Image (cartoon, rainbow over all chains, first blue to last red; front, top):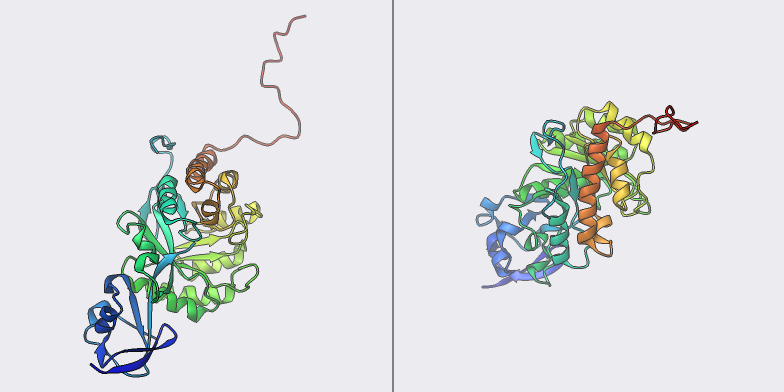
Length: 69
Length: 267
């Protein structure tokens, strides 16, 4: 599989591509049930992760819950 | 915790926010604990059901253990996501939408901060974000200052609860404006939950004695020498303050009044 550069959580990162968001999470060893994904500032619902493809230069944000008050 | 102070049956109603009912009037945060196991034990000791969490980027270079759900069961607690650290309405709305997408509930503890030193709210941004989120179906619990007018406008904006501060976030200065908090409680129909500033159990008790519906705290537990004991103390303090409020205190007098009979004294 070839590779591509995306902006992942604000930093340029080389990831396998072309791929879907579900592939990306798998590559990063993240459980889709514990992460919320934003692609180019739009939230991608969990059900659509495997059908949403990412392209070079896309901006992906992966967030989760951490301790807070 | 085997012992529980509870109101005699029928004297108090459960706390209802945004159509959901909670038995505990104490809500706790999950930030700043030195140790996640201590956090879990402290939260259990507090008796809280509503537990706040923050939304942040996954740290891709570390393990998954940093996620708070690794330490707290989302089935045991009602997770209340916050928008802490947001300095504009747009940013807060973005965080709220991300939090809802996590799939737990529609509640959001809305914070729009206006100043880095005091962490006091930007009330203009807060109102704007509250309107947007309420229209999108969120149950908005809005962190605000002790100003009545802002509290009234937040209620008008459709907030499910209004959360005035006791004193600045993480300050532990206690209840600085009892009158302001009492006035907000008296004038609003939605629940009033005091959020931030409580430092120790007497602060919590005094705050509840103003008649508010609940308290949210974090640093008072996380930074106590013994968070588990402090959580237990806070649980009792919140229950004691609530009972004391419901019981109705005696009047204040400027002069003494004897407690023993004045008649029947020896000659």
